[in-house]
Length: 180
Image 1: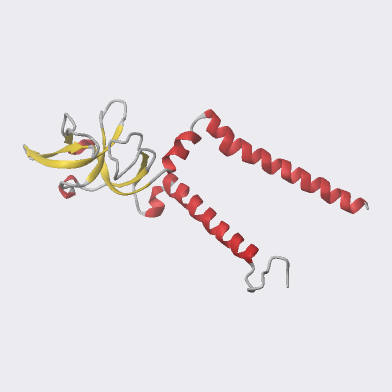
Image 2: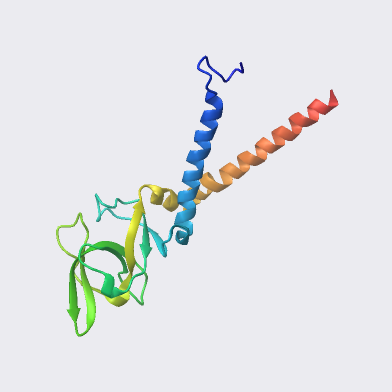
């Protein structure tokens, strides 16, 4: 019997390694999907910065958006749109509460689920980026943090430095074994 086995015959250390590997793969997969949304069948992904869509989509979530023809957008759909097309891009994700057809053009009255009133201006079809297909909570906090100087140090430089230190330690301990 090996030290990692118990009386029930289960190798808990090996099981823990497999569970840890599975969790790591899921976490890495979520971040890869956020960086390359096409990997999960979406066209775009965005970090939600406000709680205007809570409880359906909380601040810090990542939304995955697919572009669709304006004719396919209906009441109840959650859309992402450019607040100021042609100017500084500011993306907003809100629910369509009314579809307006004027002069052959479709416009959408939107509202955040947590907001009392609809947005003041209707959204033109040209401003719509797409329809939200799904969201992943909390991941946006990590992405936003990673874009800061402290995030870069914590998530990139720190682990890289730790890897270098561990490799140097392994090389030095290997050298000492050969000298004996």
